[in-house]
Length: 332
Image 1 (cartoon, helix red, strand yellow):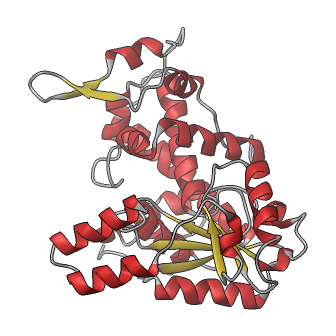
Image 2 (tube, one colour):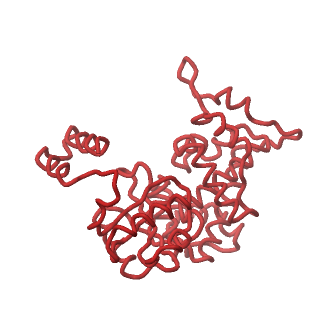
Image 3 (cartoon, helix red, strand yellow):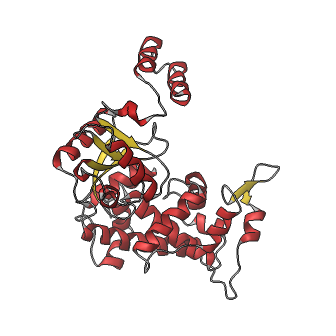
């Protein structure tokens, strides 16, 4: 409650909210450590630890308290909605409701339909998302959904390249002007532990394509928040303590930034094509919208699939463009 009140106070200080409205918002909110207080709730969002058994336990406790029409929404970033709802009396009212951090800033809301999610629950989730001012995208229940699956492939391939011998700064240079920030800076922002968990989830689902970096695991186990640090003159450099954790391969393969970019974009093209074939989303534009509004992908690129089409990577990897000729393209 203190955190929420502080966020409202920040809006007042910035002139984005009048004090009378801020007072009204604060008065509307209550907090409790007892689930019994949820008895008359119409829409419950869980955001507990990303562990299936923990989430199932929480939903079972909530279901015992709320009414039969209350929607149970999960903020899971990668776990199965269908599995989470399996043991409930009303699995049809469980829906994925995945926000992106920071929630107050990032517009995307992935809405995920489980195998038993009914139309009323899905429609309610979309209506609530609209009232929250979020950009809503419908997603099939599948490992890591849209953004985390594509970012997982991105980070997985980057980690594989670095583990093979390419220095972290060289790998990051391959995405200057394409990614929202250098990939290993982004990994630090997301958190190495979360990145590792996401890749472990995806590697279990798709072991032929996703890679779990033992070097990343060492960074997490060492409690390091990222890969870079700054010297006394403010220059960014790889943290020497992190560098010392990395195992050096006997025959390192050092790629140029251009080779890194080509290799990783090829992986993204493969993954995007597979996601469309699996029906994770309805169209390439859903992938583009999600990457722009959920991962900070630059607007001027038009999204991921136009970039892959313009660079020729789409046709090289999949044999065809994602979008028709002329859509989101630049003049030849």
